[in-house]
Image: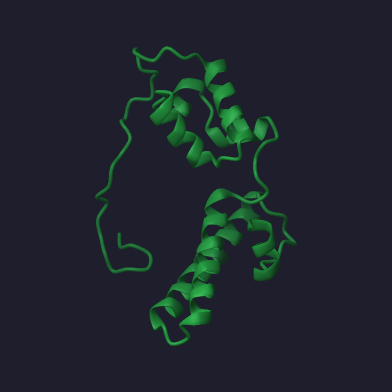
Length: 151
């Protein structure tokens, strides 16, 4: 199947191992990993940053295989999750940066196309999050309002 906004095909990328069991060399137990996740979340890190930090600094290859829960579920259970989902905020930040760039470079056609593509991705995510209940049904995307939420 082709990629969304380019004509490239293929699935070439790094993959996680297929086994879903806790490695034998890992010494940390479930409670310890959950405490690490909560400690890093209180420092203000996002779920993906927490996963990278646990992998690189604490030797936890995958939180889901150790605890049986994903990082976002652990944060949700302890009421430490963010207002907006992480992928949604990343797209909004990208759109804000592109808009700033376009203010100084008005004739940049590539940036104009980039804004169109990110807006379509944002709209698709809004529909998905409304359908799954992560955003309220009456939630509207207003760039100025969301810019204040993000910064």
